[in-house]
Image (cartoon, rainbow, N blue to C red; front, side):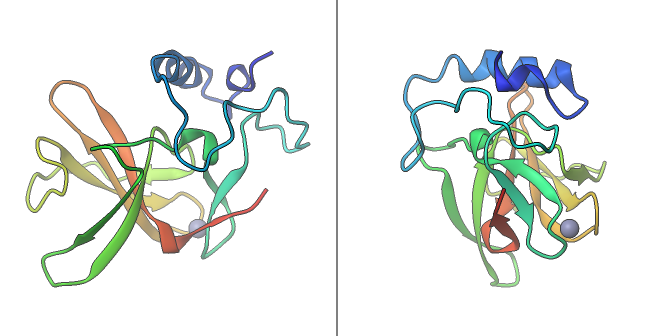
Length: 150
Ligand SMILES: [Zn+2]
């Protein structure tokens, strides 16, 4: 059984991810080739190695959900007050709460509006969700606010 089929209470979305991922022909740099089959993590969430909120340790997303935009998973950007952010792109982040208002001001990904993405558990600002009018959406999360730990 695919680990994607038993999601964290969002079976429909997990199915969609599987569909999208199947169109990707090559694994990202430094990733294992393909998801591990049936990891018995004992946590009841059937996806790969977890990526957690560094502030509270709550699960945010997983390595399987890393994706690329513009040919790279990682991007460095300056915000309007000159702070640098190193962000990583993810297809989906079940552990993020997304704030509703969308903005295209200072967007780092042309054509995409952004929304703030917070840790669901502690409300730490973890990054942004990007949405384009043609339906593309992904998360850009600030990498130094995350830890990879199962
Ligand atoms: Zn948190």
